[in-house]
Length: 458
Image 1: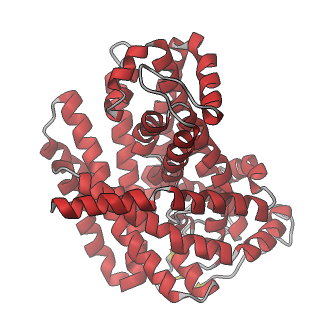
Image 2: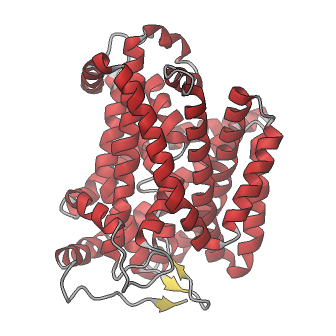
């Protein structure tokens, strides 16, 4: 077993190393150029996200689809992932995380566009979409569609289920002394209650949960930043300087090379916002929208909120705290300890605040990924698999709460990385259609010729 674990770790390190960073960041830049810098429409996307499209075809509102995607995306990566980038790549990694968010919006737009354009309607009226339908119907490569669906269905049990439940139970055990099995039961029961109701139930909960948990965490970051006010400017300076020049030392640790900052910043940023992975478009396809461009602009804002805003705030909070108290360098070997130590600066409320934020982020990820995995499994096996998949997902959430997950983390990382490959192939292959049609729809969002794209029955 040890040999297998080492082999998995090696594969994970190779896959999420330079090659995949080049593929994802290269795709982000390519889609940015191909779409004519679609990021400039981000505020239009924010407006659309809270503007119901009453005439659109779909199951849930555009904001509901965005909230569910954000629920899956805004997870422990925004809390622990940022500190991982800081510990491994230095303060400059925070800058490169932010850059992946800026360019990643174009990929999120492109993958959502192809998902909504090629979505189908099931016999019972549900809207089904995702990279697998675009690969099958748009690119005519069903074998790639099957691979993507297989990777997504399996990855959901890892990164979207067991690891998230484990984060909740571990945090509650370490900070409140609650046994992991009790937390596991509570998480499994709450998860089952929500996901049994399907996408409408999930989006209903996420529509309330996501704005609350994001605001809750942002307020915590702002309190720490206010307490570290005199170190805010220096934090911004050291982040920007370290992104382009070697840093001699930070927080009592050895220096960091620029290459380290780029590698770990990009890797954690790409993993955090999931742009290019093809996950968020699985729920975006269920949104009520007249054409792919509307929901694509809305979905694009998810990367903006996740990485450009929340990850940036997390990074500034951590860096300013380390500058204020260099002794925190002693805790930087443990990414979780560093994050909790930083928030413990807030008197009385610090530890409960970060624990609750971590629990909410992880639980919301459970909700979002349960839907992602379900859609992928349905593509492979048909509607008969939906209920067994939901039951298994709930069971695995409990299992994840009570066992060690180092191996599961690495396997989940690999499956997530494998999802990227067919999704990126589809996005680049269909980029001409995405750019041409998307630009037309964006120019005519409020015009009469903004016609609805027909949806075919599966």
